[in-house]
Amino acid sequence: MAIIPLVIGFCKKQGWYDTINVRKIHSGSIPRLGSIGFAPVFLLMSCLYLAGLQGTPVRGYLPLVGAGAIVFVLGILDDFYELSAKVKLLGQCIAGLIPVVFGFQIIRIGPLELGIFSPAVSFVWFIGIINAFNLIDGVDALCGSLSLSILITLGAVYILSGSEYKALPFILAGGIAGFLVYNKPKAAIFMGDGGSQFLGFIIAGLPLFKPAQVFAYNLFPMMIVLTSIPVLDTFAAIWRRRREGRSFFSPDKLHLHHKLMNMGYTTKSILGFLLIIQAGLCGVALLAVIWIEGVRGFAVLCGAFAAMIVFFTIMHYTSRSIARMKPGGPERGNRA
Image (cartoon, rainbow, N blue to C red; front, side):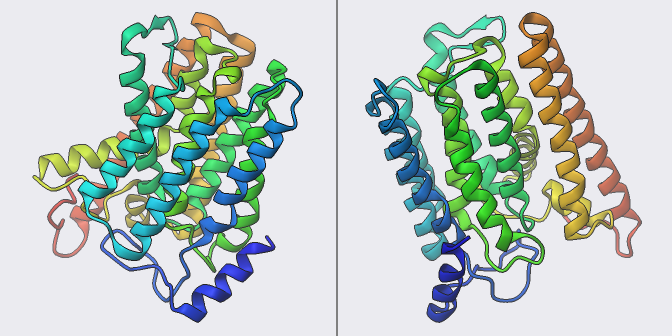
């Protein structure tokens, strides 16, 4: 909260404002470097926290810190220079490989032991979540609020499990909360690609920090449910752009928040609506992992994810029907 006003003033002085493209829905000149207020602070404070735990080597955590710094810097460069898709993907792949090589891996998905497929699945998880959080960052406070709820839920799991690493999610959650004071509608600053990609990377990596492998049976399915809004929105974008022969990195206005806006929702109501759904997902995740556990907990999580698929399907067809009823009919791509 102390840093962000300084960042806003500096960005205005330098003329560093968020660019407007097909995917963006805002107007006006809005500073875009809000990630400076929470990303470097988290990397530093999390290391200091782990260094202060008796008998706990911080070295095992450093690969996530180093790779997180790469993602953050790459995102900042993209904010300024609009890097090509190949350069961004290359940087993300390098950052995703580092923690995987050093043991940040998904060991199992419910009853399924991944075995030799663990590194490949973990790598795809990192790259997928980085881009999912980047794509969902289209409405004031949405990416930050979703991240905040996920981190608090993950932290609650660690607390209930007695993990000594329980503070890690809350350190980042605190930073995001300070940023959201200035990012809530109407936003005075955006986090930019440096922030959204960084949040995606850290949220992907924290559950894979080896000493934090508690409730391992359903930990990864829980993360899939918690991130289902950005994950399913990304799957929809991949399908839509592949069908239309466009690059995955090409922007459009057919994401979930765009469809809700097409249905008459305002920025504030979109945020409120999706956060209510996210709160339900967090509740189901905690119930399945902490109290139900095992195969039954896995079934509950699968049911929650299936319900989200149904939700996205309903939103898709509802938005398409509304678009068809508007004067002039649907534009190219509205059938997506």
